[in-house]
Length: 390
Image (tube, rainbow, N blue to C red; front, side, top):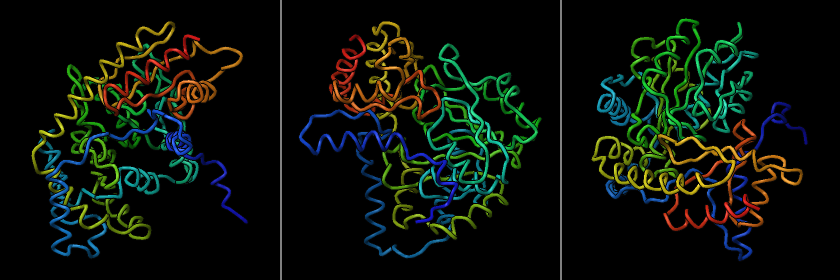
């Protein structure tokens, strides 16, 4: 069967693939702990579920406007006003099927064939493949653990070329959990705007930032330079709503129209009653988010305490999200020369599923998700530590 040539360059999601292997072992009766998928282990807050149920009971099950129901688009604007002092108008907001579709819409809307996307590495696994699907060229920009895997203006300037069109920023980061300070983010944004490079700021973990780190959004830069900035966010991580598929994007109204055109020819609107739940999430109490954030911070501290005892392993202390991204390359040898073989060995011997750092553009590392309960996390880390020691 003939398949499009561009798909030959696209890799399946490594996180989902590793989790699938873990599920296969579980189906065979093997006890496996998966730290592979970035999915909160908490239930969706009760008031959010109640709003969706009420919408179902009211038969709110028809098509809605492609960019989202008006009250949800207004609620997105209200969210940014509530936390960052900038309230985008309704026409500058689109609601998508998860943050992933918002990103895909943006790459497709912005890129012409051959244009480059600067992607600080390590990066979320889908950025390069989305770039390729949109006809662009991904350009990884390396970073180091000593710098908390945060990209510098100097590194961006070195990687930049006349074909550079887009820069992707992700803070807190998946896979590292590291966060840019306000000053670091401002310096990068000034650099990008001065070179007319469009910035996509992926802020999906902005509610999961742990003191002394502080959330730092690019929505203020969007307000000043709407032709050069788009902000992507969603409810999957902060409200434990991964399966609800609610993402959103703030961008110039003309870019919102372009994304609506793409979405209208692909998925149309987001699930109608899920949108009502999203309104409740964005406009209601954030006490539930604070409780989850406190639990994740506690788990981070537990995990860092264990990882810091692993000889030769370097791991920046993440300021947000729910991942650790330790550099384990000092433990590599002839039999285990890279992150992929190490993760395979850990799955086979420790019965713990991790994701190879190679999938995120840094083969020195592996990614742990600590979005599991404390006892499960400690048991998994103990088992992994024994493999590394051996």
